[in-house]
Length: 572
Image 1 (cartoon, rainbow, N blue to C red):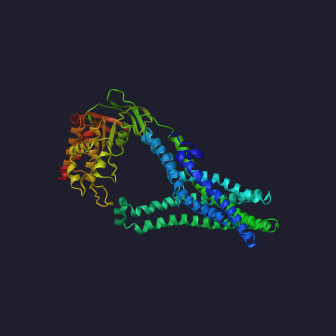
Image 2: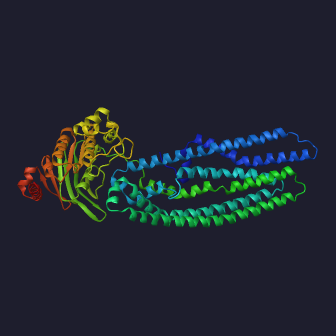
Image 3: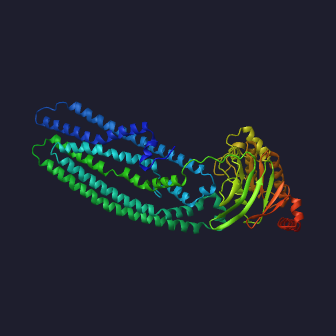
């Protein structure tokens, strides 16, 4: 599916919805004029009755008026949810398209691009600080605004039936005043848009007060008052600007309403002074003028379109940044993952310089090095999440990674494991948990496998850092069981003690199948069990071999191993 340009979002609502909405809106736009005509006719017949001519057909006219009013109220109640449903369909289609485009980006660095993330933020927050309407509501609103001409035309014809130029003249004034009002609203929205930075900052400070992730340090360091002041300062600044703009808008709208009052008064006086106009016709003209005022002053639909304009523009720019679905790279048939003379850096800061490394199926490789040596960057290149600045990368599309900062999903324990392979069966999920020793801790939860792993939910439960890491390792085991050919474990056992880490590593070795395993760890008691060890230093691979070979070489690996062994002996 391809996103249309700003004027074409409406098609995403579906033509049946649009057809029904069009019929409803057209009736509701013509209904005020029809009520005015019937009322005028009814008043005219009452006047005839008062003159002794008999109120002929009064029952029919009353029934018609009652039907118009009842049907109008019923359709108004129906029109709003129908319009909202059409808007939601549009928003859902836009979200689906943008999600597909972002997920189709071949590497993580393109997803993390600051420009793309800014555009996504703008698209998700179209009206910024004070309403939740979005692109869908704006598209439907613009469509409804376009239909208002039908209502103006019918009212104009009623006025022109008295004096031909009254209708066009009054409609021109109505449109002019309506545009002037819409312009005032656009100015207001410009002010609201300008408050976005302050409002977002205030929201961020406020979220830290209630977010469970930050709760510990907020209370330990006594940050409540400090955070509240920052939140209030930023939010107060945004509210002050919006309030000032709202007051200015109200003052300017008063002039618009006064202009319309003068126009309506002129028409009423002109009609009343026309001796040949019947009482019924006068009542119809008054109703038509009122209908014209209501139609021309209904700028809400235009307002939504104006407010959503930044989001619509952001969608266009996102399409350029994520231009289409890119197929995943095909395996080269050798089963190898390889880096050849790869260079990579963040901005102007180089991280890897000329790295060459080949992984073979079923092999376990450990990567060691000091903090900042580029180990995690290497892992993301191996899994295809980053593109190199130079050199060649041959990746394995069916790769799975467990990072130290792995996600802790607010889902059931079952889904927290299954998320690594949504197509997995129940038996495979439970076998993966058993393989890494996570079954016992899951079964001790309040609702077992169905327990939501968050204390925010009724019957939910939380896990310790080490227990969460067992869940993460169960995901890796499940990925291997479901066909992953590369497992990257980046400090996955940092919260486990040495014995638990060794046990977890042995279990991963047993369940890896034909997958290559890349282990990043600072614990040499685990690293030494790898088939091959790679030392990263200065952006390059400086040593490579088995544990015994690297100790015999008396290089950087041997130095780090001896240092850690000495610290362990001293601590015991």
